Image 1 (cartoon, one colour):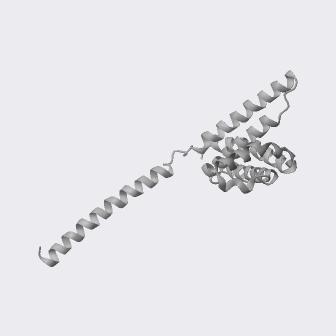
Image 2: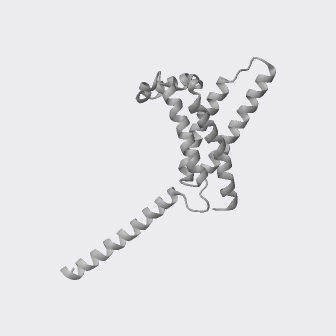
Image 3: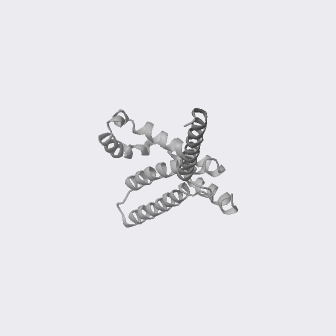
Length: 170
């Protein structure tokens, strides 16, 4: 892990951890999740039991942010934890934007500034979710393993055919 990754990950994770802890302390902000949960339940019937459970969903998202943020800051499971942060951060950016007051010009400017900040954080964590640190991705490794298995099974089949020809004299 480079020095940049060692420093940048905890700095990036700090915002998500802080936001997650605040959301766990003040679950009232989860009322703004209702439209998103209703839309998700309409799109996928399996999510219908979540209707009316905004507080539970909000706490789960906040706990995910804290846990994934801590793992990300420590450099453990960086792609998985940053993917979880991406999902939770996107939802929180939406909730923050919807719940922000925009009655005065100053409030509108603050809402836009927070929206841009949250979008920047989501973008940064999106980049880290695809960062392989110079190592091959899981998809490449799976493809390579598949190619190796195919080659070895073909060689095994050819060897088996040759041995059977020798034994049975064909």
